[in-house]
Amino acid sequence: MPALPIEVVCPSCHSVLIVDAKELICPRCQKSYGVGSWGGYDLVPPGTLDRDGALEKSGRDREAASYESQQRKQKTPFFLKLERTLVLRSLRELPAGAILEVGCGTGQTTIALQRLHRAVVASDFSPQSLEILAEKGIPDVTLIGADASALPFPDCSFAAIVAVGVVGHMPAPARERALREFHRCLVPSGVLVLTAFNAARFRAEGTAASGHFGSGIPYHSWDANGLRALAHAGGFETPMLRPYGVFLLLQHLRVRGSWSIYRLGSPVLNAIEGWVHPLLPPNLSFPSVYWIMSARKTA
Image (cartoon, rainbow, N blue to C red):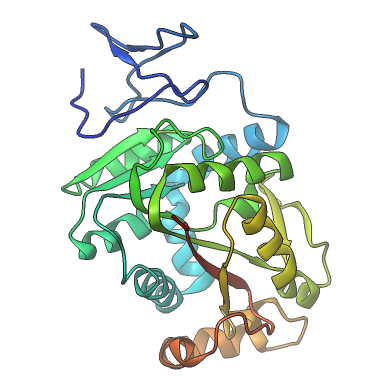
Protein backbone atom coordinates (compact mmCIF):
# COMPACT_ATOMS: atom_id res chain seq x y z
CA MET A 1 0.00 0.00 0.00
CA PRO A 2 1.28 3.53 -0.77
CA ALA A 3 2.51 5.65 2.10
CA LEU A 4 0.23 8.43 3.32
CA PRO A 5 2.14 11.55 4.45
CA ILE A 6 -1.20 13.21 5.28
CA GLU A 7 -4.27 12.09 7.18
CA VAL A 8 -7.29 11.15 5.10
CA VAL A 9 -10.88 10.50 6.10
CA CYS A 10 -13.92 8.96 4.48
CA PRO A 11 -15.23 11.56 2.01
CA SER A 12 -18.79 10.51 2.76
CA CYS A 13 -18.87 10.65 6.58
CA HIS A 14 -15.43 12.08 7.55
CA SER A 15 -14.53 9.11 9.76
CA VAL A 16 -10.83 8.21 9.98
CA LEU A 17 -10.07 5.42 7.51
CA ILE A 18 -8.52 2.16 8.60
CA VAL A 19 -5.60 0.81 6.56
CA ASP A 20 -6.24 -2.76 5.48
CA ALA A 21 -3.96 -5.01 3.45
CA LYS A 22 -5.11 -3.69 0.07
CA GLU A 23 -7.49 -0.81 0.77
CA LEU A 24 -8.72 1.86 3.15
CA ILE A 25 -11.95 1.05 4.99
CA CYS A 26 -14.39 3.37 6.74
CA PRO A 27 -15.43 1.84 10.07
CA ARG A 28 -18.66 3.87 10.14
CA CYS A 29 -20.20 3.57 6.68
CA GLN A 30 -18.17 0.50 5.61
CA LYS A 31 -17.12 2.03 2.30
CA SER A 32 -13.74 0.94 0.98
CA TYR A 33 -11.20 2.76 -1.18
CA GLY A 34 -8.39 1.23 -3.17
CA VAL A 35 -5.29 2.29 -5.06
CA GLY A 36 -5.75 4.08 -8.38
CA SER A 37 -3.93 3.40 -11.63
CA TRP A 38 -1.47 6.26 -10.86
CA GLY A 39 -0.26 4.52 -7.68
CA GLY A 40 -2.06 6.67 -5.07
CA TYR A 41 -5.33 6.24 -3.21
CA ASP A 42 -8.58 6.77 -5.11
CA LEU A 43 -10.90 8.40 -2.58
CA VAL A 44 -13.73 9.40 -4.92
CA PRO A 45 -17.00 8.11 -3.38
CA PRO A 46 -18.54 5.60 -5.80
CA GLY A 47 -21.77 6.58 -7.52
CA THR A 48 -21.83 10.22 -6.39
CA LEU A 49 -21.34 12.02 -9.72
CA ASP A 50 -24.44 13.39 -11.41
CA ARG A 51 -24.84 13.53 -15.21
CA ASP A 52 -22.75 16.67 -15.66
CA GLY A 53 -20.08 15.38 -13.29
CA ALA A 54 -19.88 12.12 -15.23
CA LEU A 55 -19.64 14.05 -18.51
CA GLU A 56 -16.77 16.13 -17.21
CA LYS A 57 -14.91 13.14 -15.80
CA SER A 58 -15.18 11.20 -19.07
CA GLY A 59 -14.15 14.32 -21.00
CA ARG A 60 -11.11 14.91 -18.78
CA ASP A 61 -10.04 11.29 -19.07
CA ARG A 62 -10.47 11.36 -22.83
CA GLU A 63 -8.51 14.61 -23.30
CA ALA A 64 -5.81 14.04 -20.65
CA ALA A 65 -3.06 12.98 -23.06
CA SER A 66 -3.50 16.06 -25.28
CA TYR A 67 -4.68 18.56 -22.65
CA GLU A 68 -1.45 20.50 -22.14
CA SER A 69 -0.68 20.82 -25.85
CA GLN A 70 -4.27 22.00 -26.45
CA GLN A 71 -3.94 24.62 -23.72
CA ARG A 72 -0.69 25.94 -25.17
CA LYS A 73 -2.22 26.08 -28.63
CA GLN A 74 -5.49 27.73 -27.55
CA LYS A 75 -4.17 30.22 -24.98
CA THR A 76 -0.41 30.40 -25.74
CA PRO A 77 2.35 29.58 -23.21
CA PHE A 78 2.56 33.28 -22.34
CA PHE A 79 -0.98 33.33 -20.97
CA LEU A 80 -0.40 30.10 -19.02
CA LYS A 81 2.68 31.67 -17.44
CA LEU A 82 0.61 34.74 -16.52
CA GLU A 83 -2.05 32.55 -14.89
CA ARG A 84 0.50 30.65 -12.78
CA THR A 85 2.10 33.96 -11.73
CA LEU A 86 -1.23 35.36 -10.55
CA VAL A 87 -1.95 32.22 -8.52
CA LEU A 88 1.43 32.35 -6.81
CA ARG A 89 1.04 36.06 -6.02
CA SER A 90 -2.22 35.23 -4.25
CA LEU A 91 -0.40 32.75 -1.98
CA ARG A 92 2.27 35.06 -0.56
CA GLU A 93 0.94 35.35 2.98
CA LEU A 94 -0.05 31.95 4.33
CA PRO A 95 -0.12 30.29 7.74
CA ALA A 96 2.05 27.22 8.26
CA GLY A 97 0.97 24.03 6.57
CA ALA A 98 0.55 22.15 3.32
CA ILE A 99 -1.23 23.24 0.13
CA LEU A 100 -4.08 21.34 -1.49
CA GLU A 101 -4.62 21.66 -5.22
CA VAL A 102 -8.13 20.62 -6.20
CA GLY A 103 -8.63 19.61 -9.82
CA CYS A 104 -4.90 19.42 -10.51
CA GLY A 105 -5.36 17.74 -13.88
CA THR A 106 -2.02 16.90 -15.47
CA GLY A 107 -0.11 19.26 -13.19
CA GLN A 108 0.39 22.56 -14.99
CA THR A 109 -0.21 24.50 -11.77
CA THR A 110 1.19 21.76 -9.51
CA ILE A 111 4.71 22.34 -10.80
CA ALA A 112 4.45 26.07 -10.05
CA LEU A 113 3.26 25.42 -6.49
CA GLN A 114 6.62 23.78 -5.77
CA ARG A 115 8.17 27.23 -5.70
CA LEU A 116 6.44 27.84 -2.36
CA HIS A 117 8.58 25.11 -0.73
CA ARG A 118 5.65 23.44 1.00
CA ALA A 119 4.17 19.97 0.90
CA VAL A 120 1.57 19.79 -1.87
CA VAL A 121 -1.39 17.44 -2.15
CA ALA A 122 -2.70 17.30 -5.72
CA SER A 123 -6.18 15.86 -6.18
CA ASP A 124 -8.38 15.14 -9.17
CA PHE A 125 -11.18 12.76 -10.11
CA SER A 126 -9.65 11.92 -13.51
CA PRO A 127 -7.45 8.80 -13.27
CA GLN A 128 -5.89 9.45 -16.68
CA SER A 129 -4.88 12.98 -15.67
CA LEU A 130 -3.32 11.72 -12.44
CA GLU A 131 -1.42 9.04 -14.38
CA ILE A 132 0.19 11.73 -16.55
CA LEU A 133 1.01 13.84 -13.51
CA ALA A 134 2.52 10.83 -11.73
CA GLU A 135 4.82 10.20 -14.70
CA LYS A 136 6.34 13.67 -14.20
CA GLY A 137 7.76 12.54 -10.84
CA ILE A 138 7.37 15.89 -9.09
CA PRO A 139 8.97 15.61 -5.62
CA ASP A 140 7.06 16.36 -2.41
CA VAL A 141 3.67 16.03 -4.11
CA THR A 142 1.08 13.48 -2.99
CA LEU A 143 -1.47 12.46 -5.63
CA ILE A 144 -4.96 11.51 -4.46
CA GLY A 145 -8.14 10.77 -6.36
CA ALA A 146 -10.84 13.03 -4.92
CA ASP A 147 -14.09 14.77 -5.78
CA ALA A 148 -13.99 18.53 -5.10
CA SER A 149 -17.43 18.40 -3.49
CA ALA A 150 -16.51 15.57 -1.09
CA LEU A 151 -12.90 16.04 0.02
CA PRO A 152 -11.28 13.16 1.94
CA PHE A 153 -9.43 15.31 4.48
CA PRO A 154 -10.07 16.27 8.12
CA ASP A 155 -11.19 19.73 9.12
CA CYS A 156 -8.46 22.40 9.17
CA SER A 157 -5.94 20.40 7.14
CA PHE A 158 -4.42 22.96 4.75
CA ALA A 159 -2.88 26.42 4.78
CA ALA A 160 -4.14 27.04 1.24
CA ILE A 161 -6.42 25.47 -1.34
CA VAL A 162 -5.94 26.18 -5.04
CA ALA A 163 -8.62 25.38 -7.62
CA VAL A 164 -7.76 26.57 -11.13
CA GLY A 165 -10.62 26.16 -13.61
CA VAL A 166 -12.62 23.80 -11.39
CA VAL A 167 -15.87 25.30 -10.08
CA GLY A 168 -16.87 26.57 -13.53
CA HIS A 169 -17.31 22.98 -14.67
CA MET A 170 -19.45 21.83 -11.74
CA PRO A 171 -23.26 21.89 -11.52
CA ALA A 172 -24.75 24.33 -9.01
CA PRO A 173 -25.33 21.97 -6.03
CA ALA A 174 -21.86 20.42 -6.40
CA ARG A 175 -19.98 23.74 -6.65
CA GLU A 176 -21.73 25.07 -3.54
CA ARG A 177 -20.76 21.89 -1.69
CA ALA A 178 -17.21 22.30 -2.99
CA LEU A 179 -16.92 25.83 -1.56
CA ARG A 180 -18.14 24.57 1.82
CA GLU A 181 -15.59 21.75 1.63
CA PHE A 182 -12.80 24.21 0.83
CA HIS A 183 -13.79 26.27 3.87
CA ARG A 184 -13.94 23.18 6.10
CA CYS A 185 -10.50 21.93 5.08
CA LEU A 186 -8.66 25.26 5.50
CA VAL A 187 -6.98 26.17 8.77
CA PRO A 188 -8.04 29.49 10.35
CA SER A 189 -6.56 32.31 8.23
CA GLY A 190 -5.98 29.80 5.42
CA VAL A 191 -6.42 31.07 1.87
CA LEU A 192 -8.55 29.83 -1.00
CA VAL A 193 -7.46 30.78 -4.52
CA LEU A 194 -9.68 29.83 -7.41
CA THR A 195 -10.24 30.85 -11.00
CA ALA A 196 -13.57 30.91 -12.82
CA PHE A 197 -15.10 32.01 -16.09
CA ASN A 198 -16.08 35.65 -16.45
CA ALA A 199 -19.53 35.93 -18.07
CA ALA A 200 -18.02 38.65 -20.29
CA ARG A 201 -16.25 35.95 -22.29
CA PHE A 202 -19.50 34.36 -23.39
CA ARG A 203 -21.17 37.70 -24.05
CA ALA A 204 -18.27 38.48 -26.39
CA GLU A 205 -18.87 35.21 -28.21
CA GLY A 206 -22.62 35.71 -28.27
CA THR A 207 -23.15 32.36 -26.52
CA ALA A 208 -24.97 31.28 -23.37
CA ALA A 209 -23.39 32.03 -19.98
CA SER A 210 -23.70 28.35 -19.07
CA GLY A 211 -24.01 25.15 -21.06
CA HIS A 212 -21.73 22.48 -22.52
CA PHE A 213 -18.63 22.78 -24.68
CA GLY A 214 -18.33 20.71 -27.83
CA SER A 215 -16.42 18.07 -25.86
CA GLY A 216 -19.47 17.58 -23.64
CA ILE A 217 -17.80 19.18 -20.61
CA PRO A 218 -20.24 21.50 -18.79
CA TYR A 219 -19.41 25.13 -18.02
CA HIS A 220 -20.80 28.01 -15.99
CA SER A 221 -19.69 31.65 -15.81
CA TRP A 222 -20.26 34.51 -13.36
CA ASP A 223 -20.39 38.24 -13.08
CA ALA A 224 -18.64 39.67 -10.02
CA ASN A 225 -21.73 39.63 -7.81
CA GLY A 226 -22.53 36.05 -8.70
CA LEU A 227 -19.06 34.79 -7.87
CA ARG A 228 -19.04 36.70 -4.59
CA ALA A 229 -22.40 35.11 -3.74
CA LEU A 230 -20.92 31.66 -4.34
CA ALA A 231 -18.02 32.47 -2.00
CA HIS A 232 -20.42 33.72 0.68
CA ALA A 233 -22.47 30.53 0.36
CA GLY A 234 -19.30 28.57 1.10
CA GLY A 235 -18.59 30.58 4.26
CA PHE A 236 -16.01 33.03 2.89
CA GLU A 237 -16.94 36.49 4.13
CA THR A 238 -14.64 38.85 2.21
CA PRO A 239 -13.60 37.38 -1.17
CA MET A 240 -11.39 39.54 -3.38
CA LEU A 241 -11.91 39.31 -7.15
CA ARG A 242 -9.82 40.50 -10.04
CA PRO A 243 -10.46 39.88 -13.74
CA TYR A 244 -7.66 38.42 -15.86
CA GLY A 245 -7.27 37.23 -19.40
CA VAL A 246 -8.17 40.73 -20.63
CA PHE A 247 -6.17 40.40 -23.84
CA LEU A 248 -7.11 36.73 -24.18
CA LEU A 249 -10.65 38.04 -24.72
CA LEU A 250 -9.50 39.03 -28.22
CA GLN A 251 -9.72 35.36 -29.14
CA HIS A 252 -13.42 35.33 -28.30
CA LEU A 253 -14.54 38.50 -30.05
CA ARG A 254 -16.63 38.15 -33.18
CA VAL A 255 -14.28 40.52 -34.99
CA ARG A 256 -12.26 39.46 -38.00
CA GLY A 257 -8.55 39.30 -37.27
CA SER A 258 -8.82 39.61 -33.46
CA TRP A 259 -7.59 36.03 -32.96
CA SER A 260 -4.48 36.73 -35.07
CA ILE A 261 -3.79 39.97 -33.23
CA TYR A 262 -3.78 38.12 -29.91
CA ARG A 263 -1.60 35.29 -31.17
CA LEU A 264 1.01 37.62 -32.63
CA GLY A 265 1.02 39.98 -29.66
CA SER A 266 0.70 37.36 -26.93
CA PRO A 267 4.25 37.69 -25.50
CA VAL A 268 3.92 41.45 -25.02
CA LEU A 269 0.20 41.58 -24.16
CA ASN A 270 0.41 38.98 -21.40
CA ALA A 271 3.58 40.58 -20.01
CA ILE A 272 1.78 43.92 -19.82
CA GLU A 273 -1.19 42.34 -18.05
CA GLY A 274 1.10 40.63 -15.57
CA TRP A 275 2.75 43.94 -14.74
CA VAL A 276 -0.51 45.92 -14.43
CA HIS A 277 -2.58 43.28 -12.63
CA PRO A 278 -1.24 43.77 -9.07
CA LEU A 279 -1.75 47.53 -9.42
CA LEU A 280 -5.49 47.10 -9.93
CA PRO A 281 -7.73 47.62 -6.90
CA PRO A 282 -9.51 44.45 -5.75
CA ASN A 283 -13.11 43.87 -6.84
CA LEU A 284 -12.75 46.05 -9.90
CA SER A 285 -14.96 44.60 -12.64
CA PHE A 286 -14.29 44.79 -16.39
CA PRO A 287 -14.44 42.38 -19.36
CA SER A 288 -12.03 39.46 -19.35
CA VAL A 289 -12.07 35.70 -19.89
CA TYR A 290 -11.51 34.74 -16.25
CA TRP A 291 -11.76 35.82 -12.63
CA ILE A 292 -9.18 35.03 -10.00
CA MET A 293 -10.63 35.04 -6.50
CA SER A 294 -8.81 34.85 -3.18
CA ALA A 295 -10.58 34.47 0.14
CA ARG A 296 -9.26 33.97 3.64
CA LYS A 297 -10.98 31.78 6.20
CA THR A 298 -11.75 33.82 9.27
CA ALA A 299 -10.81 32.26 12.61
